[in-house]
Image 1 (cartoon, rainbow, N blue to C red):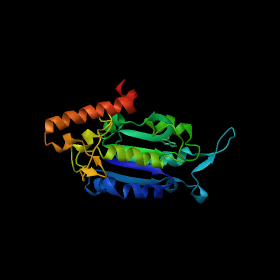
Image 2 (image 1 turned 120 degrees about the vertical axis):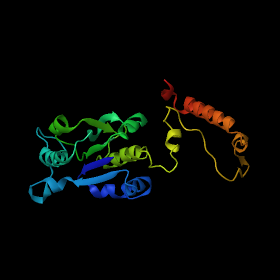
Image 3 (image 1 turned 90 degrees about the vertical axis):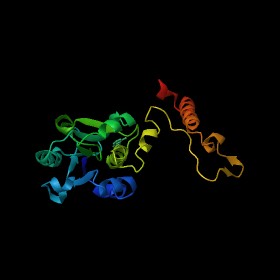
Image 4 (image 1 turned 30 degrees about the horizontal axis):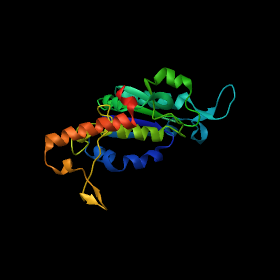
Amino acid sequence: MRIDIITVLPELLESPFGASIMKRAVEKGLVEVHMHNLRDYTDKSYNQVDDYQFGGGAGMVLMIEPIDKCISQLKSERDYDEVIYMTPDGETLNQRMANGLSLLNNVIILCGHYKGVDQRVRDAFITREISIGDYVLSGGELGAAILCDAVIRLIPGVLNNETSALTDTFQDDLLAPPVYTRPSEYKGMKVPDILLSGNFPKIEKWREDQAQKRTEKLRPDLLK
Ligand code: ADE
């Protein structure tokens, strides 16, 4: 999978992609991530990429021209499955969307900033708008990092234990069952006996029951 991220703050995305699973996925060659600084696509002085909004009102708006130049250049090099815009008014990211996106080959992610982008960018270039939740961030970069993390870990070969993404919370619209590690007793708090029994069919059944109970208690909305 190839991901092209268009941003005015590439430095904000350096550390998420420089550590842990996302770094390993890049090193293994399972995903390519390319950052594009929008300021490299403007002819204006001081590398200006934003301007005041027509009609007045607080907040700057990212201009269409540098975004058009960047997206057009990328599209001239290869086909893209989606051009995603990170925005609080997009569809809210969930596991099902992450599963679907993990199957794509080439994706562009445009990060908004300030008041967002000129509406004509959304009308002309964007195929999908994604939000990471009902709150407003200062820009789309952290949302893009979260989206990429959720998607990249689902690409086959990225996780060491191939089955572990399948038992994640939300994968079957259920929360994950509780997990324990050594010691089996700590300050009087014991690990459930069943997990120490070695009876794997029974352990599996116990995990399914726990996932169901936890979901009923904490997220009944998922069961609807
Ligand atoms: N940009 C600003 N707020 C956002 C959000 N909640 N999700 C995605 N991108 C954003």
